[in-house]
Length: 271
Image (tube, rainbow, N blue to C red; front, side):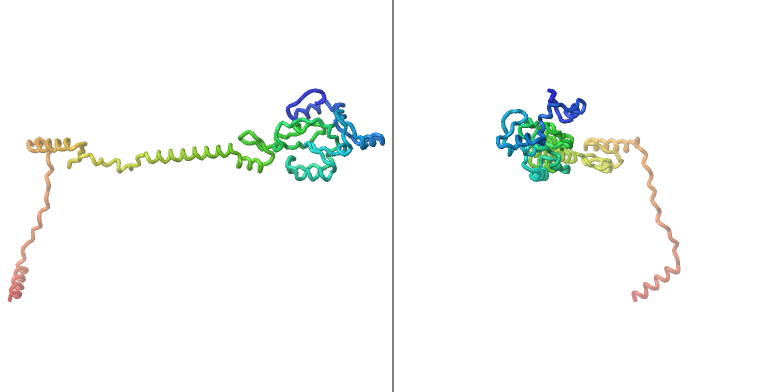
């Protein structure tokens, strides 16, 4: 600021100007139209003019150039309008006409190196003549990236992510992590024992079952069980066997008429 203080961003600088008002020192920064014939002759004389800083004489061809807030200067309004229309430095959707700028000398605006690359610059909505280009940044309108950079449009951000080696490496690492996770899930499912309840309820193939219903883990135990059952059956101390009842064959009453008829038919057949 002309008062001697310095600020980190444009918002703090503009708030300071609104609170404390403008300073007379800034009148030397902005070059105005000559108010008299004598000043006009001095301004457009062939001998040249002197900048506000008093550094060196400026040729009359450069003295009447129109200064843009981005740092470039133009000879007429037509060239300035063309620059505002096609330049990528200015934010799209907010065009500025040539009437918003004043004719300034190149030495009247102090040069300050911008703090960010030109591709990351976004022009402020209300520029202040005489301030440095770095104070016109609008960080709220930028599109930040995960790698730390910021861009003025979404399209530039997408192109950066597509071409940047950092994002390609991150995408490959994410793909590798997903493949490892899929392999882990496949191996986990393959190791599961998916036996049904009915299969687990049945005895295994290695088990040995007896006719009485008992199941043994080995053949020796089954043979020992059979021997004990036979010994108990012979000694009469075993379990009482259930008596099996057989259905008797039906008894038919002999019919004399049928017997005589069968004998007559047999005799006729033999003769």
